Length: 69
Image (cartoon, rainbow, N blue to C red):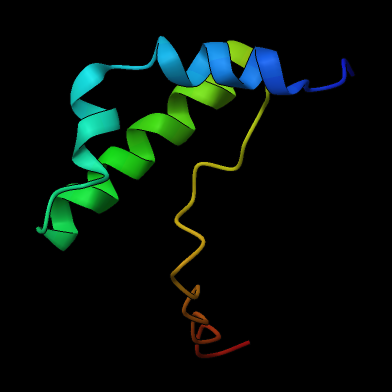
């Protein structure tokens, strides 16, 4: 895996969608979250990383065992 350098990361951020960069500064929490998600997706895409798409802020619910087993 290549090392992530500050200039490379800065280039990725500067070339991310403008709305997402500005969106981090708005007073609306939902918009800030969407902007952060877009910036993170841009970084992951440009670095060619693989990520787990499941939302890490949720917990998987246990499924009940089937009856009769």
